[in-house]
Amino acid sequence: MNRLRASLPLILLIVAGIVLVSSGIFDRFHPGHLVAHQQQIHARINADPWLSRLVYIGLLTLATCTGIPLTIVLILAGGFAFGIVEGTMYSSIGLTLGSLILFLASRYAFGEGSKHPPAIAEKLHHGFERHPVSYTLFLRLVPVAPFGLLTVALAWLRCPLWLFLGATWLGGTLMLAFETSVGAGLSQALSHGHRLGADLFFDPSIMWPLGVLALLSLLPLLVDFIRTKRHAAAESSQEKPPSRGIGPTG
Figure: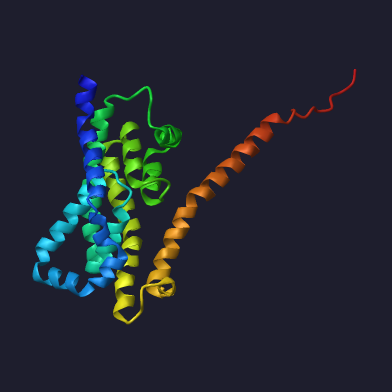
């Protein structure tokens, strides 16, 4: 009963995420919908600047704390609607607040630890134990897994709250800057008469941030390759028999 009570906040967040996805609200933030209603969106923002920004931050906070992997749609929409600087700032607030809620709910649910940790937490355990600060920042900066899933894993690993908040804000904001740039570039390209299509991705304002995100997504593969090579080299050096020196004959 105590375990169920501890897990209740996390269960409610999961249910809220299912309801949020089922409501179809993310369809309104799809690039096609944003393009079709571009003038109306900017008109509403200009009419209610504070309310529109608070609604955006609140919606991104809600989406992040439920752990659903669709927050990228909202982040791109933030760049589309508010530009790079404002969009990154508002997204950073929503992402940090939502991650904090999910982190606290997960840590409360896990208690002092579980005999059956999430699979991803087991994979991250050794790296986190050896270099907690740099490893946590790496996980927040490089997309090795969905953001919400990493938040749950860090909660199970008992990541200190100060480290979690600092890494989430710093690493998450750096990622958001590039993701928001894609949305802002989309808005800029369309305002110059470009049409929504495959050719739009070759626009410099969209191509460069997409290229950086692609490189970041490949970084975990590079790290795994280097780690595998080092492990193989260490094993081969251990398997080699020790060299025998030539001693004096009696």
